Image 1 (cartoon, rainbow, N blue to C red):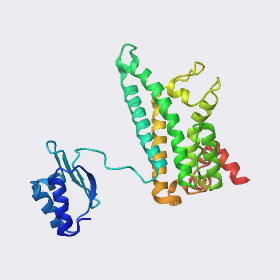
Image 2: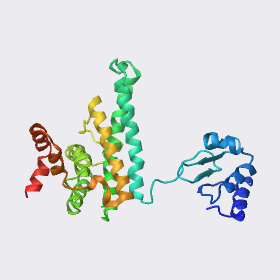
Image 3: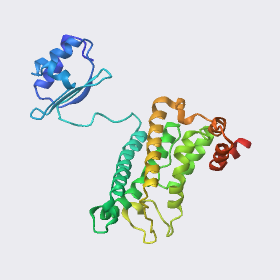
Image 4: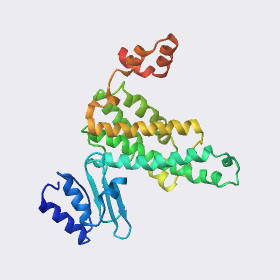
Amino acid sequence: MISNESSLKQLIDRISNLETFAYLFEFSEREFFITLLESININYDDFTAKYYHYDTGRQLHIAESEFGYVWISTHGLIARKKATTNRAVNSCLNQHIVISMLVKKAIEVVKDEKVYDIDSYGFGLLSELSPAIFHNMTFYIEVLCKAYLSLSGIQAQHGHKLQIIYQKTVEAMISNKHDDSLFQVSVLDPLYKIVNHVSSLPGDFKEQFIKYDDNPLDNTVILFDLASLTEMSTILEFSAEFITEYFYMGTETFYLKSNLYQRMLDKADTEEKKKRIQKLYPHLKKKDIE
């Protein structure tokens, strides 16, 4: 917080003396911020035309957020900071970026008609995307489950066995009464088919074999179907949104609101819709009856 002349002068000196730092600042008075800009030869009116200033020569980046803080970096353009204070959550959100980019690229390639030409760049790119998606998707499920366990106050096992980590997550979900919720239906349930596939691979398969392509009995292929890729992209967005909300909102997140099955039935305005819900989510119905 820059709230007096002394702290303002100190900040100006740090920039003028070419000290390297990147940090968030708040100014208690607008005049302090205007003085800062003018003292380092940045016109205030020019700044407010974009609300950011980037000087390649000085490697100086100043940007004002709509949320009331000012970002100042004398390193140049760099990332702002870690997403949260939880290491497991950060790991999950970082990996979400990686797998989301791969799926997005796969969608772009599939939409290109030239991909059907075996001599095209896109067709060859599929061979590179396939193992990358498989590798990063299995890792994402692992860190997603560990992030959920961490936020639920449960110590995740120090291992990488996907089936064990996923099962522990399901058990935690049930004991926390987080089942029969959007979290279960939109995140955990759809990911099970991948967990089940990995656990059923032959040859004493271990997850690290995916990373090193070290299991000759594994012939897993990624099907580049546009509808399936789009569905996976949606699941990824739901999962990252859930983890973020769980970190900031706790159990108040809408993803953990229970009794989803009955709420869906109550909203169904036709018998056909009700039958479809009963067909899609029989495991939720069974739990309610018990």
